[in-house]
Image 1 (tube, rainbow, N blue to C red):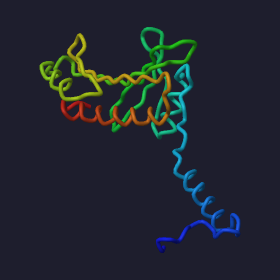
Image 2 (tube, rainbow, N blue to C red):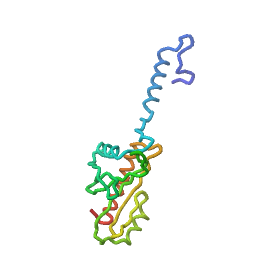
Image 3 (cartoon, rainbow, N blue to C red):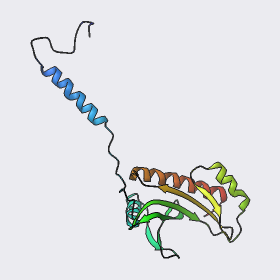
Length: 173
């Protein structure tokens, strides 16, 4: 384009076809570049049935199982390792946070001195051992206010990576 040329139509021609085309193309580009809206988690949180549906939608098996305290959690697995999804901060069947957790029965043969190594080197999931020296790994996920299923997908990915590293580090299954 020459220095003195303008992209606007010449005077007297009005807003001709070129300018309208340019405006329409610009608007289309702006609309196409707008991010898709996230699928929000309800303000009161998720129900246990929502978690099962979300896991099924992501290709996981998932079933509701009772806890010894009368509550329920979701049993599922990743990479051949079983884990539970526990519901927290619940009111009227909707929960503002969840916890991914996996425990491993080693019948007291777990070297508990190595757990600090895990907790020092891993940011998202924490490890501990129970009263019989069986190892556990857990990760809390806060869903309210303002959570989305895209964030929950990302948290599940982080959990899966952490769980796989924990299993590998300690030779568990």
